Image 1: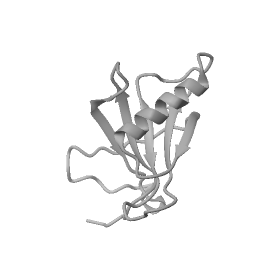
Image 2: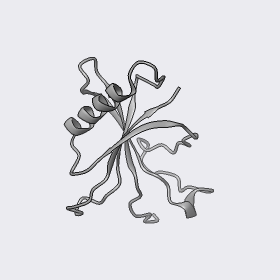
Image 3: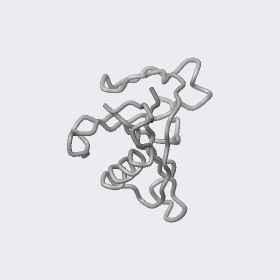
Image 4: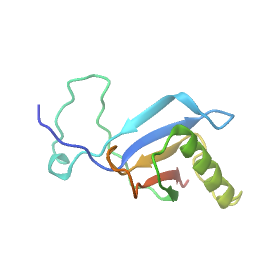
Length: 117
């Protein structure tokens, strides 16, 4: 019953199919604001879960504009190519992050993260 407002980034966990497209399974994550971190409110919808994300090291690339699925797929492929075969990271998923409200037309920030193993 408490409004928390929007947080950034909005993080979508993408599980890539063999052709690089997103599988139907995705997970959207929102950061709980600082004042609720120690005692987060209990969700009233059973499809919403509270998870603690452990610290991680990531490989990241950033791009602008209104990001669509095709943009995240494209930048994930570019990041993979830039890393080459020497970098070790999780291949079963990656994170697609957006930092801006929908009504912000310019200077938008989006990122693709690969989690280092």
